[in-house]
Amino acid sequence: MPRLNTEWSADIAEIRRLATERTGPFDDAFTRRFAQHFPTLHPLFAALYGHRDDGLEQLAAVVAEAAASWNSRPDTLKAHDDERESNPDWFLSNRMLGGVCYVDRFAGSLAGIRDSIPYFQELGLTYLHLMPLFESPEGNSDGGYAVSSYRKVDPALGTMEELANLAADLRRAGISLVVDFIFNHTSNEHEWARNAVAAEPGYEDFYLIFPDRTMPDAYELTLREIFPEDHAGSFVQLPSVDGRPGRWIWATFHHFQWDLNYANPAVFRAMAGEMLFLANQGIEVLRLDAVAFIWKRLGTPSESLPEAHLLLRAFNAVLRMAAPSLLFKSEAIVHPDEVVQYVAPEECQLSYNPLQMALTWDALATRDPRLLQQALVRRHALPPGTAWVNYVRNHDDISWTFADEDAAEIGIHGYPHRRFLNDFYVGRYPGTFARGVPFQDNPKTGDARVTGTTASLAGVEAGDPGGIDRVLLAHAIALSTGGVPLIYLGDEVAQLNDYSYARNPDTAGDSRWVHRPERPADLYAQREDLTTAAGKVFTALTHLIRTRKETPEFAGGRLSGFDARHRSVLGYQRPGATDAAARILVLANVDDHPAVIRATVLAGFEAGAIDIVDGERVDLAVGLTLPAHGFVWLRVVPLA
Ligand code: OTU
Image 1 (cartoon, rainbow, N blue to C red):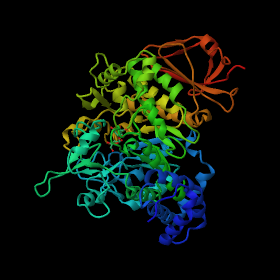
Image 2: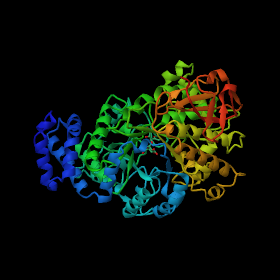
Image 3: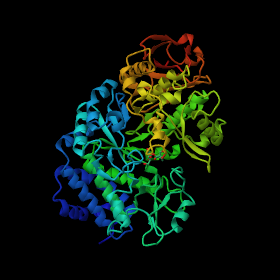
Image 4: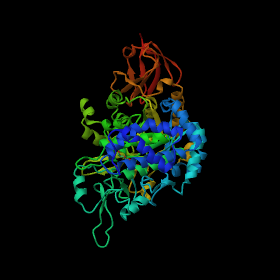
């Protein structure tokens, strides 16, 4: 079999011939999309696999997979593709709102999720991320992040057919279904994993298996430990066979999560097939788990290598051919310089914004918004056609991913500052309002992360008088910086930590379960009752959500800083249609005392502003007082 040529034009006819040999002739729509995206896919694939003798054959197989997938794509989804193509910026709308939950914990099953659609609409969701719902090992499966089959739903939750029907029901309700695509690793029970261990032909190189410690030791010289509480290093030993010591397999996360070997094009092809399959069930966004880890190279940290981007772009090109409305969301909880590298229209159109998340908590702990302010000014901008997913917390830990260089500029030292934040949020710091729990404490490096629900971290659990206001303030930031705000369902009714995880052997070893409680039916029942924390948070938050949906300035992600000249006040502006037009000015006080903003600071705007949250007129000529943990969203008009 020949290798790939360096020019796509030299290979397109042959690839098309080989692909149609497998799938039959391309229809018009696929012909058009193939012609459009092959020139993107070919050089990416060639850069990854061009040195291999089976390069051409493998790429033809990928194209055939895409063509076959297109042929079986339901007409309703093809119509949806057309709709999205005519409105490609749909996800930049200020009407977007995300929610995330576990199927079993929130609603018992997929049927329960379907029954919750009226609530999702009440809240205003347009995006629903259901946590991993695929078949996975019994007992500890890292909350489903160890997938045994991408084509089977966990039978306890439902079936693939129900998932496809749910996707359709949600779409009719104006909600896009988002699921995880956990593609760095599979579970050790996946058919490919069993075949690889048994050295079945075609599967030997699906994972990274080594006969002894020589290579693992060499790799580990430059690798970071990710889940040190589960196992040291990034490899685990397989059972011994015939009295010989067991081999070693790459496992970045838990011992039962085995990293796939993307240096093997058969893995790329297989995973492209799984993505296409899910796209055809009506999934609209794939949350790409652990993107930073997918490519490994000796002598490097094997995180965020250039090939990781080539792979993502190649996957993206394949999806554009056969499921064009599908979006990728990057989950890269790494240094902010690296996070943005995944965000591009031709790579991941959406990305978690871990920096804004972590620095919101930083500002609340320190009562000093400078790091967050700096990040918003310096690190918020994204390419057109992409958006942040802004969240207050998710199902994982908070890692303090800010750049030490940025912090140093304002006199903050990264290492002791992270120690302080960990101590503060796990309740070890005197006077702290937070009730978080440590996660992956690494005594070797001093590294640690924090878990806890928003309400528990913000002070509601501790009975701190500022607790509820901090919950609202954190959400007010996530709702107003642009992109897709994402609420962890339960947080909108101020759900607290659930310590019962420690009594269940399947979850006891993983403190993230403290903030993954079951749907709090009692709190939801109180959501209209303003004498309760649930009612206070829900009422105020849903009002902010409605306000955001009516505020076109909140669309997209453009933002500029605003210096409120007050040590505890964060400030930023969201532009209007033109520079002269009205814009939204956000001011947020992270301190426990009121903050007075002087009139001179606001003198660049017309004196008459509108507080868009309560609709009242505000006279900027007299200055502005923000209550403790208070914020304003003001529509202001810049003076010419
Ligand atoms: C992800 O997170 C998931 O969100 C976790 O729930 C999984 O356990 C994990 O992958 C394995 O599938 O380490 O603590 O950026 O921080 O990808 C969370 C790197 C995690 C990691 C991130 C990972």
